[in-house]
Amino acid sequence: MRLLTLGDPIDTVGHILTVFSELRKLKGVEAVLDRLLCEARWLAKADAGTIFMVKNDRLVFSLVHNDSLFSANEVNKNFYLNADMPIDDTSIAGYVAKRGEAVQIDDAYDIDPAYPFRFNTAFDVKTGYRTRSVLSLPIKNSREKIIAVIQIINSLDEERNPVPFSKESHAYVSLLAHHAGTAIENAVITSELVLRMMKMAELRDPSETGAHVQRVGAYSAEIYHKLALNRGVCTEELKRTKDLIRVASMLHDVGKVGVSDLILKKPAKLTDEEYEVMKMHTIYGGQLFANAASELDALAGEIALNHHMHFGGGGYPGKITDFENPKMPGPPMRGDEIPLPARITALADVFDALTARRVYKPAWPDEKALDLITSESGKQFDPEVVDAFLAVIDVITAIREKFIEPGVAAKAADKPETAP
Ligand code: C2E
Ligand code: SIN
Ligand code: SIN
Ligand code: FE
Ligand code: FE
Image (tube, rainbow, N blue to C red; front, side):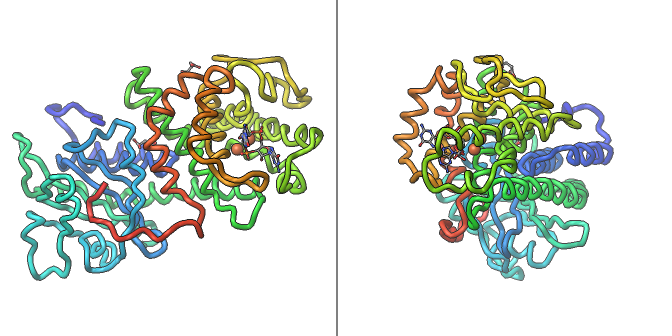
């Protein structure tokens, strides 16, 4: 992403302040991190970079960019790398997170022996990449607690040769990192609020974690990303909508708050009568957002209301316009009449429901789930959505491996510092 054309006279500090105010408007953590890393790399002309978030006393790989190895605008499974490492002196980012001070290295293969860490070469060995200059900075929240580390790699000169980071770029990226803490923290709070709402809505099972809510949000975001690339949607619009869809899609079943536990938790098939009650969760969800105060609310309402509609006709609740006296089923609605984000979430939701265990059913093997989805293309699901989904199936798999229910999660082994 390039927001300014290089060569324009640039007020860099002014630019950073603009970025900061825009960062605050982005709702999703992923979008905030992506924007931040793009801007930091742009300011310092860095070829690559990683953002680590502090979670449970470890550093989690939260975003990886590497222009030489993959485009940041593609749908890429590297964005969902499931790896973490300890906060200690054995790695550059670990040291930065532990001490809260920046580290600048001119050559990763020739680090001042006064530093306790070494550069982990595993990633370079695996990919043939040559890491040279490294700039690693802590990101603190409003209470001065370290919440993340931003690390950028290989500042490039005009000929795209890696050179040490300049004093100016160090200063600019520090300024950005200094402001970024609040933006990240706000996004984390929004997303935790969403997860808590969903946990309330599901109330199925004490081990319910919101992992499946995160999966449905991430699947929907990536399916949209692929579909938007296919349609030629411009990058700015794509990223903005992708972020909104990620959050709104997480809320698709929020209307289940209105359905009794007896039905939600029933460890068996629902009776016809119970299923009719269950179907009301779409209308309850629509009602929650009926007086949408923001674009996100409007999108969340659209998705909650329509995520069980079938592309070829059928599904529920039909066309609902009057939330005061909703009549189910409403008049039929099909194809493009169903909002695109709802058509996307419909597939993401069913894929996740099929491949996960539910109180009423065991998990299906992937192959069986994919067969159902393929055979429902044009019937239950929009064929354009199915095609986009199948095209990014490796990303979908990476998402599933990243967002697993605690207890199922095996501790990820230590991974190299800059790895995808
Ligand atoms: P959910 O568990 O999130 O499932 C979402 C959707 O995934 C379902 O929407 C359905 O389209 C698809 N799905 C899930 N399991 C299967 C399956 O075994 N075969 C097929 N072909 N599709 C499947 P649906 O049916 O409208 O259900 C909406 C929600 O109602 C479900 O959300 C779940 O919370 C509840 N529900 C549905 N059937 C039962 C049931 O038999 N027992 C219980 N306890 N709850 C059910
Ligand atoms: C990205 O992953 O490319 C950033 C956009 C987003 O995650 O919402
Ligand atoms: C859209 O791109 O959001 C509208 C067109 C469609 O529903 O396919
Ligand atoms: Fe639902
Ligand atoms: Fe669901």
